[in-house]
Image (tube, rainbow, N blue to C red):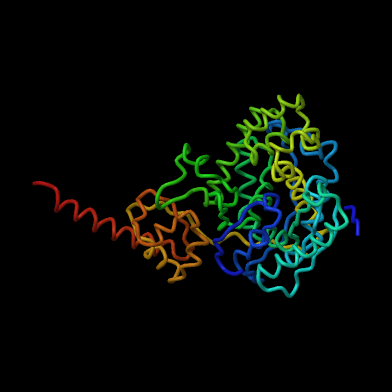
Length: 396
């Protein structure tokens, strides 16, 4: 990089770090999902990207850095490994390797204070720049601690996600997009409506019947992963290139296809560097693939970048398909009244469900293994009660 001179169950704003507006500090601060404990931890395993000859579009260099994007990828590696969320860099939005200043936000407790500090530093830097250069100033919050936590939380889901992609004959490297999209925060919600660890938009999920008033499968890590695999396959079938297909996950595959035709190139590096394309190819889209490759590199070599690395243990849960309709409070009773834990196990149950709207039969929920038999007995009793009531209502 060239240098020229919190809480449990946070359900607030969260979008990919590459999508942040250049003056938005508040949107870049993402409290952690759940506190760690040694009892939760298990040894981290470095990813193994082998035996994928049958995977769609796979070859040894399928995810090599495209020519011309080396500096972009290094910028995001630095963001993920050098700077914490108490720091950030002011850089050129079009030439991201040009970093003017590292801003220390330590000790600033409010977003207003942090924004004021960033604005002050920008103004000082701007005195030495042309108007065009000043207009390109952008602040990027560091992500080091967030990436470390994301690797920890990924231990709950990543092995199952890899299996889903392998079974779909999709490159398992693509599961690492979840680091970019949400940092594996299952409560991730964006202000534009994207939701879950894959940040899937409502209009994308509806054709697949993922959303109902009480169940939103975009927020179920594995159900969302199945849909993400389908979407990425569709992108590749349209664009015949993983750099383009992954970029299409952010920008939209049709938009990427139009750009390849407009600028007569299928090389992502050329599209990213093309000054004319930048009006329709915004900062987030230009940097999405670079940030994915950076996350891929950092997670693959987490020990080198962070030293000691651990995974979270998967939740000690068992899936149960409801034989009858139940209310959320009954589900919480199987978690000994721990509402937050019930939400962590079942992020796909919506706020409407949690407020009392019945959850229909056939909905799959997760409950602690040691409560599974208790839940079965409770549901069997409820089922008998419902059957007896239905018999009473039936005409003789």
